[in-house]
Image (cartoon, rainbow, N blue to C red):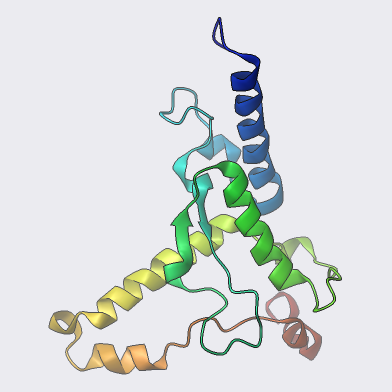
Length: 164
């Protein structure tokens, strides 16, 4: 800590560091990759840790998808990022009564995978919407894409667990 730093500044730095570690522990962000001395970020978190997604927790909402590429945003703090990942985790791994499912390590939420998938889907959407590149094919492909299809407990119970 800097000489002359106030107690509030020290607490803020510690809080930010703790929430970055929570992102690593809970949503598998890679701290070795994300945290490097001398980064421009003063809290030790790299920009990827601040990337998160808003989710629509209402399973009965047929208009707005659970997750879509437009839901990706940059949170202002590591805590806000963690909070949004937590909401997604709750929607994916809890029933309508708030009871948590038993989740195997291979089924735990991995934030960077969601971000990579969103990036890929955004590129596909952009490609399909550029008629100079795709002609009539782009709109045809785009009409087959259905955002927000959820992988729910019922699919797990039907035997689709762990990629089977």
